[in-house]
Figure 1 (spheres, one colour):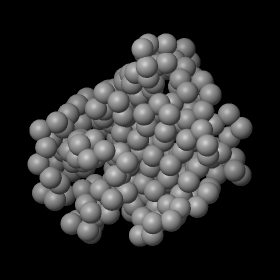
Figure 2: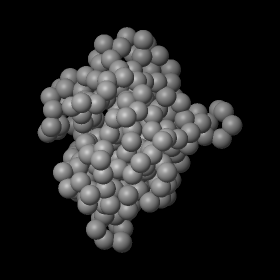
Figure 3: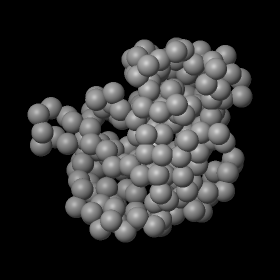
Figure 4: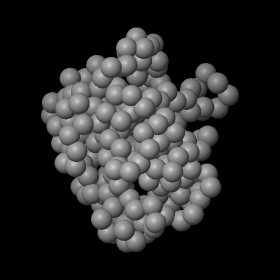
Length: 237
């Protein structure tokens, strides 16, 4: 399990999304408000963001296997990191999974950043050699990368059929799109004037937060937000 957050909009500081909110990911690492399956997210954290100053949109990552609440180095640098597209997560490792940097989201294929909030039986996942770690989330990320993010909804429904107990909340970004699934755990959306936040749970008490219904795919682009039920082909805004 974990808590994660995605941002797409104007350039903002990483600190304003992860550290500064009263119930942001730093607080969620030790006191999540809506998490159902564990009490802490102390098994690592990761922040990924896209750098438009480089050629194209380049994903950058900063990850650690230590708890976010104690990382003073990240706290000192996060206010200086700015991006229009961010994926961040704090981790509670699935029992039996390794606790190291390679097992910590966000994962990447060089184009996309991806986080998984949930659990899945590794035995139902197709064999892949591209995973960053042997943990369930890294293997799931590799499968999704291989199939392509345009097939995210189909991939999630297929894996859920093979493992009915799986929780498959996925959050991914490529610098111009945010994609997310709500499957077995909480997901909320905040439409701000300067962009859109997708998060496992609200990072403050703003009345604008909306809960995403379970078993839905969310796509955020410059054109807006589209929610698609994963058992129906049509979407709605």
